[in-house]
Amino acid sequence: MKASTHTEIYRPFVGELARGGMRWRPLAQSTLRSALRKKLPLLLFAPPAIATVIFSFIVYAKFAVESGSNPMPGAQDAGPSPIGAIGGMAGNLIQVREMIVGFHMAMDFFALLIVAWYGSGLIAEDVRRKAYLLYFARPLTRIDYLLGKWLPLVLLGAGATLLPGVVICTVAAFASPHWSFITEEGDTIWKMLLYSLVSVCVQTSLILAVSSLTKRKTHALAVALGFFALTAGLGAMLAGMNREPGWNMLSVFGCLKRIAAGLFDLKRLGHFRSFEWSLSWTWIVLGAWVVLAWVVLFWRTRRLELNG
Amino acid sequence: MTSASAAPVIEIHELSKSYGSVRALDKLSLTLEGGAVGLLGPNGAGKTTLIKLLLGLLVPDSGTASIAGSNPATAAGRLALRRSVGYMPESDCLIPGMSAIELVATLGELSGLSREDAMTRAHEVLDYVGLDESRYRDCEQYSTGMKQRLKLAQALVHDPPLLLLDEPTNGLDPKGRKHMLELVADLGTAQGKSLLVCSHLLPDVERTCERVVVLKAGHAALEGSIADLTQRRGRRLRANFGGALEPLDALLAQAGIAVESTSGNSRVLVLNEAEADADSLFALCGRAGVRIESLSELRSSLEQVFLEGLSREEPA
Image (tube, rainbow over all chains, first blue to last red; front, side):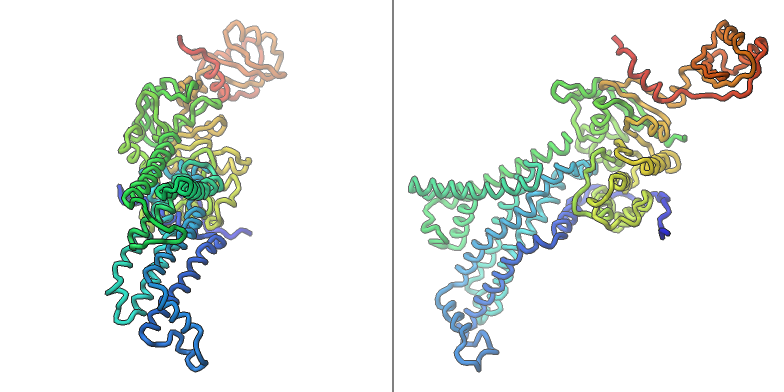
């Protein structure tokens, strides 16, 4: 026998509907909940998490060696500590600033994977399933809709760059003797925050724009990853052929590296031996990509709302 | 059926919409009052286009519309009308990876409910449509009937006074269809909602609506209350007679009472407006020496009205 409590009685709503307000918030919350519901893709966060632990320890070891203490107190009776040796080497060879930049360069790749995976279906699947009809049959503006899709993606991308950066900087601040990391390298923290935000905002905007142009998540994923790979390859090829490093501005990651080098005052970074192209132009090119992405997003969302 | 309201809920003036060379709506003008209205028409008649135009999900080529006092052509009007309208689309359009309760509550919040109210309302409307035990299941696992009921629930979550239902019984089995029609009929009568039910299934509209608009090639071919339209063809009676019927048939022909169909001693008779009380029928039977064993009134089916409306020539 079916045990049921439902009565199928309609109860009118007593109260008032809010006018205005942040309608993007419930959409963003539900987008984030839906994204995190499947467990397997969460493995994409494993490499940044592992890297964060390793880098945090290296930073801790560097400062511990500098201050003359053993970074592994439990191992002091077991002879010469290999960890201590590594820490000493790190302390001698690696500057924390460069470590953080290098870490972020590496994490950009994982951030791209995370943003591409979670973001490629956000608008494409709405279009394929016509779910936008449910959204736009409600008092939801196009900006609300876009913010409700974009902000969760920024949050997920920040999980691979911003959050690890904050953790590493926090470890560095607490481990450094007399708070020297904050007093001497304090600008690294805000530069790291700025770079992470720029990186995540650029990637999420482009991925979301690609998602709005396709009708399937798989198509959007392929196009998005292809776009980043193609621009990087094309930029590197033209720079090599013309012996003009400025062609690297074609690449989104090339632009991000140039901005990182400019922000952190580095002469070389990764496979880029020199940054002899204009930082101002790099900002302009990167800004143009973002503007283009948002123009596409507004155009496509307008079509969804008014050409449903 | 009782009307929810006598005030015009939807006013359309010379509304036109084309898709390329295809004219979906052609200078359509309508005024619909509250209550349950059926929007009938063959495929491609412009039913879904009209609903989307009313919601502001399409931009008209020309003409104006007003729904719930708001103009869907302006951004402010769209936001205002979407607060007071619930829309049940024809296509599945459910958001993957969400349970029914989460979907309805989220859409309730987007309509302007607080988080707590949205959750309470979501439970209430899912109870109402009979999805009480399945509310925590992923809606991707739902059957067609459950999806239809879920779409109705999301349209109801903010308790709008006007519901636009696009093919609510689409793809349902007889049991599911019966349940859906009961819900729609209850919303139109007991709950006092104004309904615009878009369907190509005439019995569904006949059962749930009091008025009907028949769309044909983008314009209204027929409009009015179902009761009036089905009476328009004259009063129809089914009579079973006792005795020899030849004299009666002759007298009926003389009196101008048409015999629509004949089966043994049974006749379906069509009385004109002047014969509304059927007294003349009794008089003719007396003269012919025939007794009336049973007499029942028949209504013209909506299908007949619908086909008549579609077969009418367009005005020059």
